[in-house]
Length: 182
Image (cartoon, rainbow, N blue to C red; front, side, top):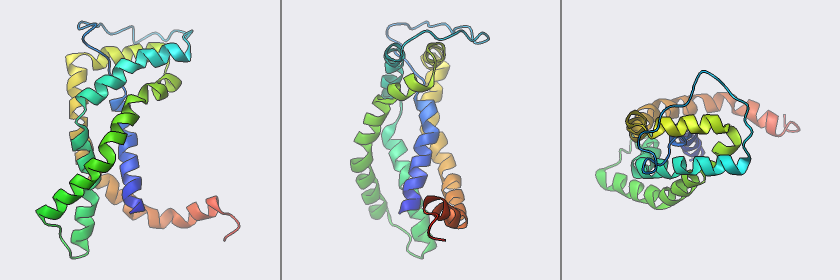
């Protein structure tokens, strides 16, 4: 179970940059990209950046197919059960999906709506404006809506890599976490 949670966390972490880069198109449908070649000093405050990033977070939640993303999170159990000789039938898959939707849909939406706070800490105002300009463009919005498909496609590879690697590095992890137990 912990490997599945780690895989889900990794998937969310990988999706976050793509999710965290949009803005409101209703106020500025023809946004032009800012100068991407010149980095200017950032004199903005955290609060200004947080406000500037809020439309992106709201658009990400609106445009992202969260139920589809949540559905990718339980997929490792299908392969795991099959490997153990207990393939899941459609009823079991539907039950897993219902459980994951009930458990993760709301918290994922909440986390994504608060993403502007993370963006405000990590990016300059210029970078936020560039993200907003790109993700409010037709191409940017198209990319945003396709991210769940990307995550669905890459999830099995990530899951397999984590499952294969964790047993190898677990002794090192334990030694780092609790050096007294060697």
